[in-house]
Image (cartoon, rainbow, N blue to C red; front, side):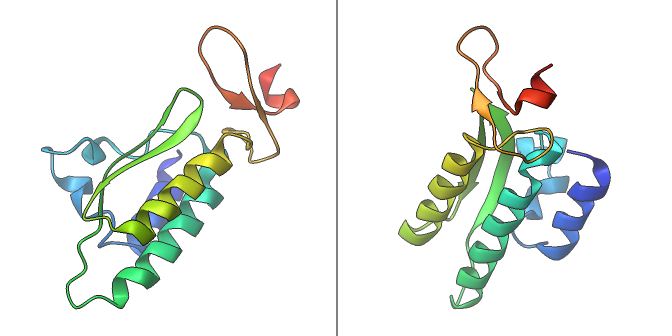
Length: 122
């Protein structure tokens, strides 16, 4: 993800990305996927942040955000059933969304698995 989009997420959801400067977590290396999934990630962050605001002590933190096997992977700690459902929804949406541009996409069948639209695949 471009540094500009990454910084927007970090600024808007500082608690969720608290580990972005802690070298003990892979989150310190940034968000490791294309810009096309920005909307999916931002929506998941918004929903999780609203849920966390209702808790006496918010516990949810991303430990790593990346692409793996053609889908978004949102590794975290402090989850509950609700946030786990949001994570699963976001990861599922990425399987049909182009990682590069955000258009509808499909996964390729062989080699390095990626989810791309026809235009970005060329």
